[in-house]
Image (cartoon, rainbow, N blue to C red; front, side, top):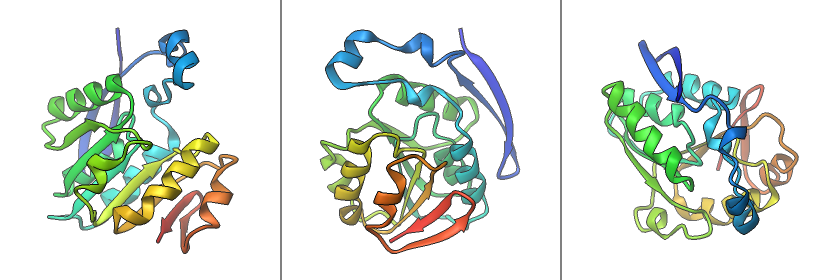
Length: 187
């Protein structure tokens, strides 16, 4: 069973499916092996904020990469705006649902499973013109891995972060412009 969310984005009404409860998706074995939690299953306010910002940009023909896409709202907004989008997440279920949501809304994008500790599929296609990430700095390892690969991805990072504990240390490493309450352009 899934929950349907409807929202307006980039002049289009989107219908998104998502799991009813992220907590019900917790797999103790996956957590024990890799501390895997189903963060992807929530429609986070940071993702909505980043998607709304991206919807206002002229992205026609630009190469856009989303990291830790989860439900992929920023990727969907970019694709509506005409970008060539690759949405990535390390959770296979997230990528499958993102593909299904794109299809149900008639939006063309690519979605792939990619881990930040094995970023070669992203680096092989670099440089990206725009990199997107929403609420991805919830663990120290996420901040460290993103800081390591970001300079090799090219382009500019648009980051939405609600004030996670590891965000400040991450942002201090880069040239950052504040675009909103919790929205940053990172170079």
